[in-house]
Length: 397
Image (cartoon, rainbow, N blue to C red; front, side, top):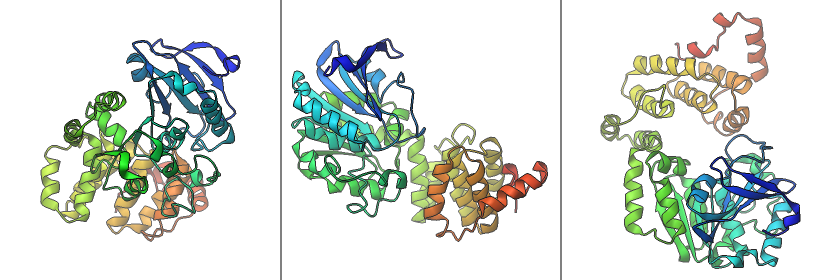
């Protein structure tokens, strides 16, 4: 590995695979030499999911267990903070790798990652023309002046989106093959994909799974197959159809398909889906969150309320479930209680940043008015068992 003097002593992943590590200012970089397929190098990048700060350099990287178990050589980028790899140290390190001809030591170089990691796999592939890219639900860039319609990661847009590797559209033209797995029904994800040069792209379209493509494939038991086929150059349209069909059994599919069909007023199609949907709210809370839209739409609001009350009681600080309940309350005409619940989440949710970002974009659309300071004061001054926004009472009318 280049710059060996900067490497930490040899370490091991949880599966026993040994690796060397370079400690950059904002990123850990692990190199694990392969065994059976050592001439294939997979460069992997973590996504943007929580936590935002990641100081533990001993953690496994994106896909490293499967990749090292499969015998591939792995170069894993593990950011210390979620910054879309837009820091100068990472950019300069890739320039160093290219200048040192590190990638030329491998006959097959693959860049892979999901979401934020998907962006990085697209963008940094430029350092080795002729490589393969396996990007899961990627962004092409977050540059506000290029994609002003991308408003889902405001904290990512604050970084410097000028200079090298800022826009993946400039990189992917150089790749041998670009495999992109995404939900074509999710408008912004599809817009990112269609910004790219299409001459070398292989589309793996998984409708209705949303921004959970990797999770849907994992739930369906096809993620490892997808990854292996992609790396080895074996992914074709027949295998793609198998992946798509398998993902219809994932919870992510139901979570996305039910509300999408409800927006189209296709209640009979939803009723058919519900016969197979995993709706145990304790085990599959987000699938229930989607199904509640159907029950309220067909007049079974009392049933939906009882279920939401149970969901809220057991998952009161879950940001995504909480937002689901806020939306449910607003869409069933209870905007005052929805506003109170939103204020409660802004004070108490585990992922307050997610709630804040959602509120900035969606609260005005739902006519929600909230004051986190006032709600916090109310909670502090009121007996918890009688507080107006107690989680287990948030769907009472």
